[in-house]
Length: 116
Length: 115
Image (cartoon, chains in turn purple, orange):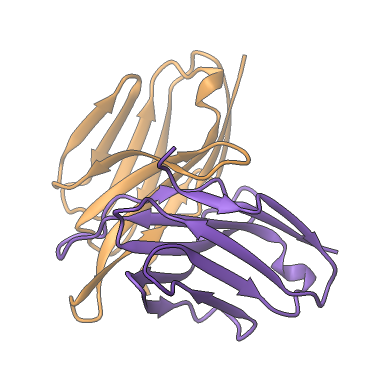
């Protein structure tokens, strides 16, 4: 399967703990996005990478959130000192972006976080 | 701030009925994408419309991009229970004085088709 894969699919943690999610994009895609989504709502943009460079970070993203894409391939999203409000589905997507377009996004199945 | 408004937010209909979902903005988009998402899964791209006035058909789904490229609609004919899901539109916009492009997402339309 050469789609976008995310793990873990589900994570339950206690408030105050740190969690890390991993995303493996489609191999030839140069862009990688992280989104957060709550039930029945559209995706909320968190950050994105062009190759290994983090080009944009949402102002909604607190300092407790950090993302990396060290070699321009897989990416990790870490949430430190989790809070109950962090409970959501965290979606990763990748695309092959050109100079004139963002490309079509291919999403992973998401990592669902529950903070108790 | 660029916004993309989707309506209706929720829709519950009977099998066989027709429906239309709208995606509206005051901003111009270079293209607009429609996605469908099922519970527990990530969104899956249905179609991309690029040209103002463009109409694309995907079986019982008809997508239209407004002439001014500020709005779009998705029409489903004879809806089936398998059409149930969250329908999302995303417009591609120029940002940073045109040096970059990003996707602006609508909040989605949650569709339930009852047998």
